[in-house]
Image (tube, rainbow, N blue to C red; front, side, top):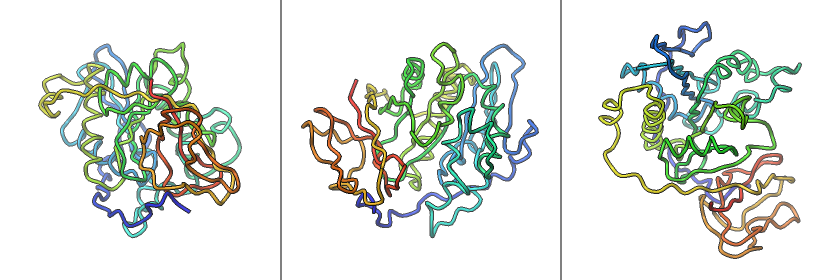
Length: 319
């Protein structure tokens, strides 16, 4: 059961050694905060929300090794699910997404305060105050299939404004997240329309392509430049000197949640296909046909291996 592309896509990007960053300076393993001593925002770049999304580890390593420090305010660099990352096996590269459960579905108060335990919940509870203290967050991810990079800006106007300020990737998705649980980028004040705090999640393309690291680094530098955290001269020297394309904003209206263990797409979808006709059949979920709800429907992030209770694809409009 998959999206028709479960062939060997090749693993061209492997984990890097992040052990030098374990101690950090916050009392929490793999979390480091640099304070400029000057007034300014507290910005945070987070990697390894999923252990097999390797580009974020490479991007943070780049920031550390290039001595990126805040010109004003504070900068926090964090590696989240290191336990999963440490299990990575190139022979089974998707398996290290998490150890016990998805770290990126735990970020509601009820779950964080609840009685159950897992490796990911223990780590989330340890990092909770770090995320709560940040004014602005960039969470670095990658995706299961080769498809365009994208920013996930949430459902608030401030998320769209942050995506616009970052400027790239070109595709920006506005959505409310997953029925299976709340993401880090939607945690607490990041998803509060009345709060100035903001967050974006960047999907840097296919997990195991080296280009994902380039996108992760460039998006991080753009994010930091926007908030005045690093000098324009440094960012300009490290970023390609090219004019940005106009961004394409897609508002998700209908996430398709899988109900059976017999979900199948009618053909291979890579993401951001625009289906011109309303009511076009795109998948079957058992006996239930899945059709586009309106003309010019955009397919966002089709799943590589659809599983019951998970999101198969998000359906959206261009705005």
